[in-house]
Amino acid sequence: MNLDIIFKAKTPVKFGGAGKWKQDDASKLFSSSQSMKFSWVQGLICFDCGAAFDFQYLLKCTKCGGLLDLVYDLPQTNWADLTDNNFQGMWRFHKVLPIRNPAHIVTLGEGSTALIPAPRLARSIGIKSLYLKYEGTNPTGTVKDRTSSTAVSSAKQFGASAITVVSTGNAGASLATYAHRGEIPSVIFCYHRGDPIKMSHMSLMASKFCVFEGEYDDLIRSVDQCVEEGLAFDGGATRNSFKHEGKKTIAYEVTEALGTVPDFFFSPVAVGEIFIATYRGFDEMQQMGMVDRMPTLVCCQSMQAQPIVAAFQSGQPFRPTTIQPTIAKGVAVGDPGPKGPRVLEILRQHSGMALAVSDAEIQEAQSLLAESEGLWAGPTGVVSLAALIQAGRNKQIPSNSSSLCIITETGLTSPYPPAQGQVVKTSLEDVRRLFSCV
Ligand SMILES: *Cc1c(COP(=O)(O)O)cnc(C)c1O
Ligand SMILES: [Zn+2]
Image (tube, rainbow, N blue to C red; front, top):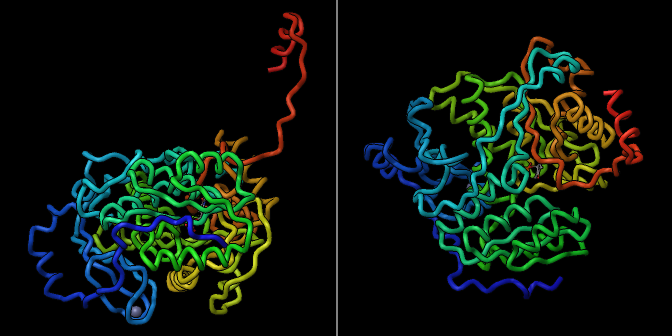
């Protein structure tokens, strides 16, 4: 694959140079009037070996190669002190996001999406209450905008001179848009069978728009290598802990709006950013004394791409799987990298659930959502709802419980079978007759 189209970064992004994160530093942060800080972020910690690192852009543990996550210095707090209404959308929660200087924020108003009660759907599924967190109103129509905002803001924060991602559609359109907004050059790779509307969008926003036909795994290896050489900031989902933080705000927004956590929280899972990030959100709220329990987290995948569901249900360790085509392109991932085992670990530790749905169930959920609640979402967007409908049918959730489904994308950018409208004549008599039946 030809990769010499990638920008040569003027100042390569630094890797390594990790120092052990000292307890002294932590306490200094605490004593210096921490509630006044713009971000409560402290540093990074490795899941696998526990090594701690100063706050910096680092994609993996320099000791063991493990997945890193951000650590925050969290006080006991409440909604009034946590949120900042001088900011819009998800940046109201800047204290629990990893950007230290507001000048680095790149935003188009993502977040603060509607929490929509779905009483008719709840009744037909046979549960007490159902809420939909509708992410289709984000600037590019998907949940990805939350992570593109934290990714591009982080790229600015660390002085990166370019940003890149390999995408099947949504991620590329979203990241290219935010990079453009933040005036950071972007190199966006898209699978040649991506949805045409998403590809047009990407090609307008990206500095370099590249279509690939070869093996996805080969391309990812090449792009990851370029990212490690510092040629571009990592806009991909598998390793960058700064990027996935944006999706954490879904958990905060839902809990703030409901005043409590729902009993069941249904997320679609591809690489696992939504799942891991919202888990982190609930965990942080518990640490800050804002909620006293965790919802039951439900990992929802397509039957054609279900590495996590398969491992969870069989009790086996995580293994990447080969996948088959599915209409839910946004969750068509067989090898999510180190986040796959992490999702599985969270599911097992917290008694979660994992469900896989067929393309037919996805299409059924799409039309049921439109008919009963008036919302038009894309196939990937309703994977969570399709899983809830399946769980309801199989009596896997109690009828007196409350559920939340994240509807992750609008239906306006995905193909759908063409509509069959009634052919009419244009005379007044004929038109008048049409109104008699409504
Ligand atoms: C990417 C995507 C997902 C899956 O998100 P992960 O965080 O990678 O698990 C779900 N829905 C939509 C619409 C997406 O674009
Ligand atoms: Zn480690």
